[in-house]
Amino acid sequence: MLASQRLHDFNRPLQDDHQFRLTYTQDLLGRRGLDVQDIVRRLVAFQVAIPSWALGTGGTRFGRFPLGGEPRSLEEKLEDVGLLNQLNGSSNSISLHIPWDIPQDVAALQQQLQEQRLTIDSVNSNTFQDQKEQPASYKFGSLSHTEQAAREQAIQHNIECVRHGEALGAKTLTVWLADGSNFPGQQHFRHAYQRTADSLAAIYEAMPSDWTMLIEYKPYEPNFYSMVIPDWGTSYSLCQQLGQQAQVLVDLGHHLPNTNIEQIVGRLLHFGRLGGFHFNGSMYGDDDLTTGSMKPFQLFLIFNELVDGARDEAVTNAAVAYMIDASHNTKDPLEDLLQSVENILGAYAKALLVDRALLADYQAANDVVRAEELLRDAFLTDVRPLVQEAYCQSGGALDPIGAYRAERIREQLIRQRGKLSLSTGL
Ligand code: LRH
Ligand code: MN
Ligand code: MN
Image (cartoon, rainbow, N blue to C red; front, side, top):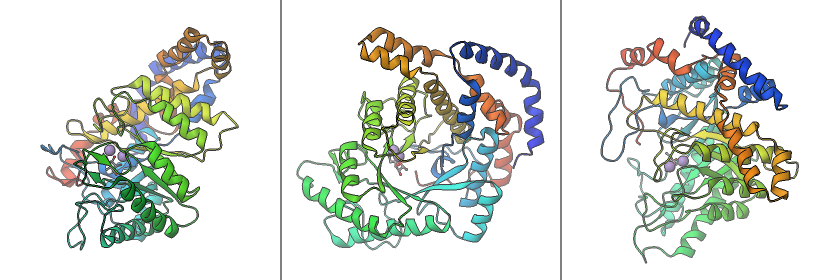
């Protein structure tokens, strides 16, 4: 843990410049009738969960270049998330992946969570890899498998994930299926869908009544001809059959190029079925790059839908779970996560600037140019002083990456954990 005095000392020489930029932004936005303090309060309250599997160097199927100092246990993963949260005050929870993160000493973990003021956000099941000594193989699918023994094993694994999550206070199960086919004719589309729906129903039945099941979709990979849950329509239809506790999860990387993701977000909000996000950045496919690194305008437009939905009484969608799902080969994973969170907060702040009444007027009048310019104006506003103020108000660093480097945290972690520490299976 970083001593808060050190963050204070780090911030001191930056305060003068920060106050200058904040005052300017405050004046500018105040002239437009915006309540900057309210925006900062919302940014302070906004939390994004960190995936346990992104704390180590990710890699690709061609190779991995470990940086060293990566967490070797769930306890060390919690330490890393605690550290991120100290630096930015915006990531107070962690998503677990079972069996990569099987809790061993539950009481000790509960205590650590309390001490670091963290929560377990969600548990993710893993039926896309075979584990040692597992009787049935997932080579040809899990919840959709043609053989009942494989389906049953996958169902039981998901239920076990819920039990692990319950012990640690989580309330969300995320299901992502790699199930699908690589060649035409390999799989009967309708039957595979039905088997999946039936398996999900068995898991849903076993879930406590205050839990949510998030169903994630993905158009391709690891199967390249068809995926059983390739798109939001399929996720949505499964949720509808299951019940109110089932919601769609939107992973930004799980779309074909040029998909209008913000429209999908708007649709799901309209139907009250938007359960959560896996934020990441993507150029081509499921690239899992830093959130906002490639398409910042799209990220802003997604937040524009979210803010619009939150301000519309007609929208009854339950609270949305915000999670990152990124990991890559070239950056220090902790710096990558700090960047992702910063970009997410920036997109949110910009969406809060949009004058919705005026936008509605322009839309009603079909004033295409004014409506577009209104959004562009919000998008082009420099909101970094507001994000930095939010960091500061939550006890974090004005420049989290700067503080991370100044404190030589990676070097310390390498000293403590070694140069060749192992990462997740990704
Ligand atoms: C699959 C995915 C899914 C998994 C995670 C490790 O591409 O996005 O969310 O659980 O990666
Ligand atoms: Mn994902
Ligand atoms: Mn993915």
